[in-house]
Length: 85
Image (cartoon, helix red, strand yellow):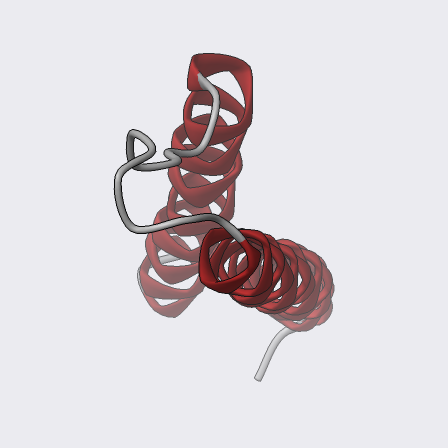
Protein backbone atom coordinates (compact mmCIF):
# COMPACT_ATOMS: atom_id res chain seq x y z
CA UNK A 1 0.00 0.00 0.00
CA UNK A 2 1.41 3.35 -1.03
CA UNK A 3 1.98 6.12 1.46
CA UNK A 4 -0.75 8.46 0.09
CA UNK A 5 -3.33 5.65 0.32
CA UNK A 6 -2.24 4.91 3.87
CA UNK A 7 -2.59 8.58 4.78
CA UNK A 8 -6.07 8.77 3.19
CA UNK A 9 -7.12 5.65 5.11
CA UNK A 10 -5.86 7.18 8.35
CA UNK A 11 -7.92 10.31 7.68
CA UNK A 12 -10.93 8.12 6.86
CA UNK A 13 -10.50 6.29 10.16
CA UNK A 14 -10.33 9.58 12.04
CA UNK A 15 -13.48 10.85 10.32
CA UNK A 16 -15.30 7.56 10.97
CA UNK A 17 -14.41 7.57 14.65
CA UNK A 18 -15.54 11.16 15.09
CA UNK A 19 -18.81 10.46 13.23
CA UNK A 20 -19.45 7.38 15.37
CA UNK A 21 -18.72 9.39 18.50
CA UNK A 22 -21.25 12.05 17.46
CA UNK A 23 -23.86 9.34 16.88
CA UNK A 24 -23.12 7.68 20.22
CA UNK A 25 -23.33 10.93 22.20
CA UNK A 26 -26.52 11.94 20.39
CA UNK A 27 -28.13 8.59 21.18
CA UNK A 28 -27.20 8.95 24.86
CA UNK A 29 -28.61 12.47 24.94
CA UNK A 30 -31.85 11.34 23.27
CA UNK A 31 -32.27 8.47 25.74
CA UNK A 32 -31.71 10.78 28.71
CA UNK A 33 -34.17 13.32 27.31
CA UNK A 34 -36.82 10.62 26.87
CA UNK A 35 -36.18 9.24 30.37
CA UNK A 36 -36.54 12.73 31.83
CA UNK A 37 -39.74 13.25 29.87
CA UNK A 38 -41.14 9.93 31.11
CA UNK A 39 -40.26 10.81 34.70
CA UNK A 40 -41.94 14.21 34.43
CA UNK A 41 -44.99 12.63 32.77
CA UNK A 42 -45.45 10.13 35.60
CA UNK A 43 -45.62 12.95 38.14
CA UNK A 44 -48.46 14.69 36.32
CA UNK A 45 -52.15 14.07 36.89
CA UNK A 46 -53.99 11.96 34.33
CA UNK A 47 -56.21 14.83 33.19
CA UNK A 48 -53.31 17.14 32.31
CA UNK A 49 -52.05 17.34 28.73
CA UNK A 50 -49.20 15.11 27.56
CA UNK A 51 -45.62 16.33 27.61
CA UNK A 52 -43.52 16.28 24.46
CA UNK A 53 -39.90 17.13 23.71
CA UNK A 54 -39.48 20.71 22.61
CA UNK A 55 -38.83 21.31 18.95
CA UNK A 56 -35.32 22.67 19.52
CA UNK A 57 -34.24 19.40 21.16
CA UNK A 58 -35.75 17.28 18.40
CA UNK A 59 -34.16 19.49 15.74
CA UNK A 60 -30.77 19.26 17.46
CA UNK A 61 -31.02 15.47 17.61
CA UNK A 62 -31.91 15.24 13.93
CA UNK A 63 -29.06 17.57 12.98
CA UNK A 64 -26.56 15.62 15.07
CA UNK A 65 -27.70 12.35 13.48
CA UNK A 66 -27.25 13.91 10.03
CA UNK A 67 -23.74 15.09 10.90
CA UNK A 68 -22.79 11.69 12.35
CA UNK A 69 -24.06 9.72 9.36
CA UNK A 70 -22.45 12.22 6.98
CA UNK A 71 -19.15 11.60 8.75
CA UNK A 72 -19.53 7.87 8.32
CA UNK A 73 -20.44 8.33 4.66
CA UNK A 74 -17.46 10.59 4.09
CA UNK A 75 -15.19 8.04 5.76
CA UNK A 76 -16.56 5.32 3.51
CA UNK A 77 -16.00 7.48 0.42
CA UNK A 78 -12.45 8.31 1.51
CA UNK A 79 -11.67 4.67 2.16
CA UNK A 80 -13.04 3.69 -1.23
CA UNK A 81 -11.06 6.50 -2.85
CA UNK A 82 -7.85 5.31 -1.22
CA UNK A 83 -8.17 1.92 -2.92
CA UNK A 84 -8.33 3.59 -6.32
CA UNK A 85 -5.33 5.90 -5.84
